[in-house]
Image (cartoon, rainbow, N blue to C red):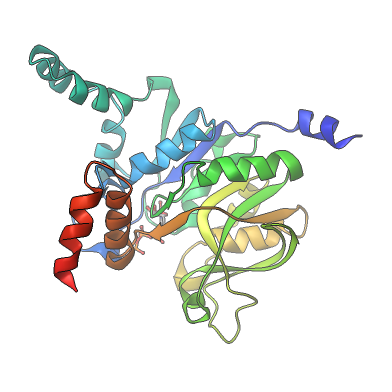
Length: 297
Ligand code: UTP
């Protein structure tokens, strides 16, 4: 079969899973009541940054793995009739357009619940029925990536060439390997890697590389078979990385060192940096922000 023919029979990536049922303990007390995913970078919540990246990549169905205390996350994407009516009566059309841009159609959002935060792997498994038998994308909303050609769109380009599973990778300082999943991989072309193994949060002395897994994945549905075992890994949690490391024995995994600046918004440092970078990318406030930042040397 020619590679063009192989590409044409590859199922397209239409669905994305957003696991948003975690506790956000690194961000307490902000996350005592407010979900971490609703914290704002620049002018919109983290979850909206992720949904916009997904839309740019052609995703049509958005699956939230959430819990019953986090209804605000789904509400954010529903039309807010009262607010729209007031804005419309007052002729505030710019504001009206802004809020309407974040509305999703009813059948585009699917909700499933993770009753207890048992880990990222468990959260993905909770989406099993909604995902079905097709490959799907996963977005961890902690990671936001500043680039006009979104990270997931870049990954779908790789998937269209290579098929299988695709993971976003970033080169990090060796001292930080214990914070992330790390890939054992070799570079095959430009910024694409062939991954042989994945290890969750290895000590720097044991890490197979400094290529860290960033919170964007394209996964084949067979991952669910491994996740179903509910085996606990690092930190006593059911880890996605452990199941991917098993699936690697049967299927290809490519890593993409993507173009764009990634911010880890799961903690204060990355979150504050992201606010500065996104602020500087907004022409309406860029000059004043740069000016004001000089005060804080
Ligand atoms: P994190 O590892 O950042 O965990 O999860 P967390 O609970 O959100 O935050 P900390 O570590 O306590 O500060 C990455 C993503 O996976 C989701 C989180 O909501 C977050 O978007 N997640 C994590 C779940 O949905 N369920 C889980 O059991 C764990």
